[in-house]
Structures are given as structure tokens and as C-alpha cells.
Image (cartoon, rainbow, N blue to C red):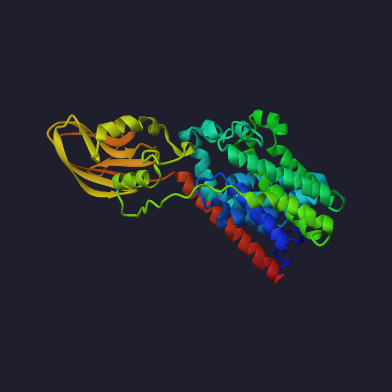
Length: 416
């Protein structure tokens, strides 16, 4: 409805096609073969359309756009970063202080609603390699500008380059700048930021590096193109422009399908590893991305050799053990030791694991990289359980408080 969505975000069938193409662009290089049609990526495209569109039309709402920005952050934080940059750029072009104030309010609202996620994330960045893990290797922006011969997926990078060329042809043929100069300028900025011409921007080491892949700017570029493409779709030049923009989508290179390893919630790590290896030759030891690996990850190889197939390792081997409970957030074992020993659990060390021996809290002193404790002779119970980042609870409180304030303000407006 016109009350909920700004006019710039309403789309006919060609506009929906443009958004679907933008979702495909954003999800093309994700690990899943079906990522190009992932509903979450389509939601990204719609959210981008709503927020940037409302800024261009001057209809930014603190509550509505704040909620959409929070949702976009939770769906895909790089897309949220793209949108914030474009909304700020559009606001600067408008020179409207009122619009700038509403945009700031929307940003504060979004930060409050999503605080339960980003507060603990920010506090734990240093525990997982921080900037290098998020912007190095295949995530290096300089390697992934359009046209780069060092892109981690060269075929896809070539296709994305043609998408950008098609979009620029659509702008030229349709002469979109005549009716929507600000929107056309934003499209040009997006394509420029994705191109090699913007290489110096990515080399500055600015926060933009966390966007990781410059071709992600094609997502808002295609979404912004939906409105002018729809407005002129009935004319011959409009049809040619639309064909130029959507043409590359006809040769979208999809990832090769693989066999389903048929993993289940009750499957142990050993059969799960064998299933992954058998299904698509996946390495069963690589269980997560580099940006999610704690410092203890570097001891993974030595610990795999130390534990072998066992869940508990006692050194020196002076006793026996029995698993009482082994769940994702809690591990409990009973011990019978003849001498003081270091007892290690098959569990990567992280600051928010709490360790107790017979109910008394003790420091985690397992083998390097794993949770454990030094236990005295006799019969004891060793328990490790997850207590979580205390800032997560702070974030939940902030998010609930923000939501409550929005509800009260909406109720007061309705009453008055």
C-alpha cells in the first residue's frame, strides 16, 4: 500500500524481474547452488528498494525504515552497509536537513533493534582474527573488482561484468537521467564502485573493505534501475533498455549440483564427515569459514591427533572416564583418577565456556586449544557449559526497549 511502501519501490513485472536479477547477482558466488534464487536474497532486494527509494522520494520514516534496515542487517550485513552508504549519498544530494534527521533516527532505530546481534559480534571480533579474517584471502576487495583476473570465481566475475555493461547500456538507451537524475547518478556510483576504476577506494583500508566483494554494489544498482525501467517499459527505447539490462540473466552461470550427503541432527561427527566426503569430496575437517574461527583453531590438527576417536583425553593416563552428558552447550564426564591429571574435552576453547569440578568453578586448563581442567586424584565430575557473551543479554534488553518505544510512539500517534 502507499502508506507502507514509497512510490519508488512499487514495481511492475519488469521491476520484479530486475529485483530477481539483483538477488541473483548478490547470491551468485555463495556456496549453495540454489543461492541465486534464495528467498532471503530476494528479501534483500526488496528491502534495498524500500529504504533507498524512500530516501530518494524524501519519505524516510524513522520507525519503518529503521525496522527494514535492522532486518536487512540481520539478513545480510554487507547489503545493509551498501544501503546506508547510498541513503547517506542520496540525502546529501537532497540537501534536506529534515531528511538527514529522519535518516539518522532510522539508523539509531535499526541499531537498537539489532543490538542483540551486533553488540556481542563487535565485542568478539578480536577473538576470531578481526579485520584480516574478514577482508583477507578470497574476501580481499581488490581481488574481486569487476574484470579482475585474480577473482576467486573468474567465470562468475566475467558474467557480473557483462551485467554491469548491460545496465550501463540500459541507462544510455533509456536516457534515464532526464527524468530521474539522482537515481541515475546513484546507479553510476554503484557500477563505478564495482569496477576497477574504484580500486584506490578499496586500497585505502576504509570500513568499505568489510563489504568484501565490490561486485555486491550491483545489487542496489539493479534495484535502483527497476523504477526507470518500469516507467519507460512501453516505449521502444524502454524495451531495448530493459532487454539490455536483463539480457545477461539469460546466461546466468549456476554452480554444479552435488549429491545430498543426507546429514541428520542425530548424526555423529565421524559419519557426518564420511558422508560429506563421499557426497561431493568435501573436506570433513573444514567445518567453518575463516572469519568464524577462534584462536584455538590453529591447534586443531594436533588435537585431532591427540584425541583420535575419543571424546576425553587424560594426561598422564592415570584413570578412567565416562560421559554423563554430551550436548552442544554442555559436556559432563565422571572421572576416576589415580593421580593429578590434566583432563581435556573434545571442545574448542573459547572464553565463554565455564568449567567446574564437582560444582566448583575452575580455570580452563586443558590441552592447548581445548577446554579442560587439572583434576586431583579420586572420583570427580567435570562439567563444561556455555555461559555466552554477557553483552548478548545487554543487546536483547536494548532491542526490547527499542521495540517497546516504537510501539508506544505508534499508539500515541494513533490516539492523537
